[in-house]
Length: 91
Image 1 (cartoon, rainbow, N blue to C red):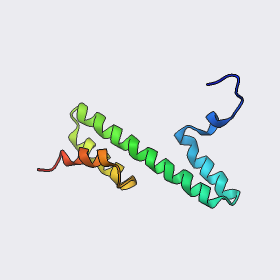
Image 2: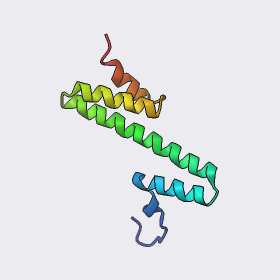
Image 3: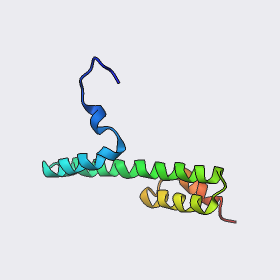
């Protein structure tokens, strides 16, 4: 964090704050901006699901890995790495 810059972006940058930001945008009538924030949140969740699946594979939990890869794809059908991870379970 830059101590000379008093910008408050660090307060709303964490993923858990994006939902609050989207609600604020909606209340202010900025519905398109709220939609964009929610969309970015889904993409971040998709990446987290993929990483969770990869970790599950590394510790030999294939069922958990398969479920989290499926979750990643349900959030973002274009998550190619999750698709590749899920393909490991097919013959």
